[in-house]
Image 1 (cartoon, rainbow, N blue to C red):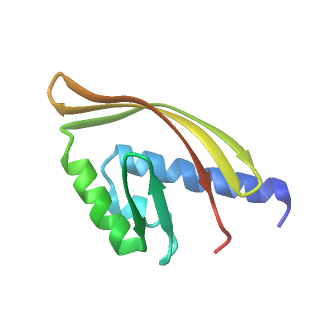
Image 2: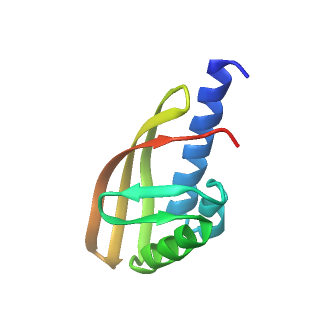
Image 3: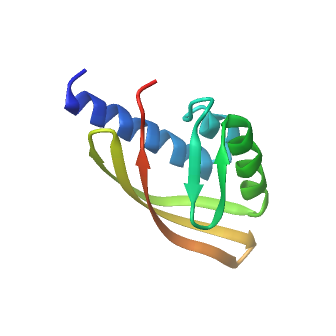
Length: 110
C-alpha cells in the first residue's frame, strides 16, 4: 500500500471516529480501534482495549445533552493524523462545557 493510500486510510478512520463520537454512536467509535488499542487523552484516564474504550465513551457522551461537531480538519502524514476538531458540547441546554479541542492520532495497520 502506498504512503498516500495509508495516509488517506488513516484520515478516514480518524474522521469516522470523530463523527461517531459527535453523533453519540459509541459502537461506531469503538469500531475504529483494534481490540488491544491504547487511547490516551489529557482530559481522561488512559484506556486499553475496546471494552475500556466503550465504557469510557459511554460515560463521556452521557455527560452531555448536546454534542455537535462544528468543524473537522485532518492533516494526515503516513499513519499519523493530526486533526483539529471544533466541538460544541453542552451539559444542559445553554451550558457550554467544551468548545474547541485539537488532537493527534497514530493509526496502526490492522
